[in-house]
Length: 77
Image (cartoon, rainbow, N blue to C red; front, side, top):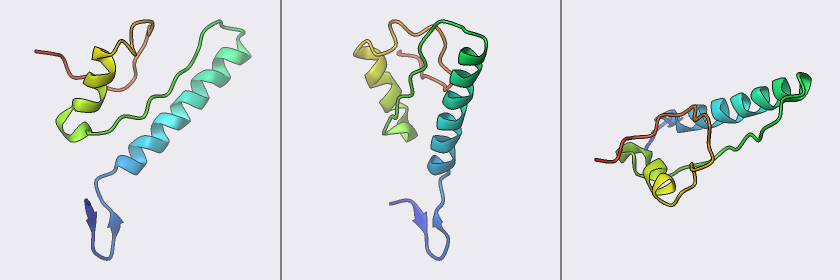
């Protein structure tokens, strides 16, 4: 839907996705190395152009037990 002819995917979602996965793996590795308790969760969200994906998850309570969120969550107004 948002790919450019001759270039392919152009909006960087694919880069954001792999960055999130890599960060999750790195945090997990550090937690294991230093024997830190906790859980790493990676949530894929859709409809981010309007900020809706994370807001839907937040409204459904997905972040209730979350201590740290590394990607921006739009405030509910």
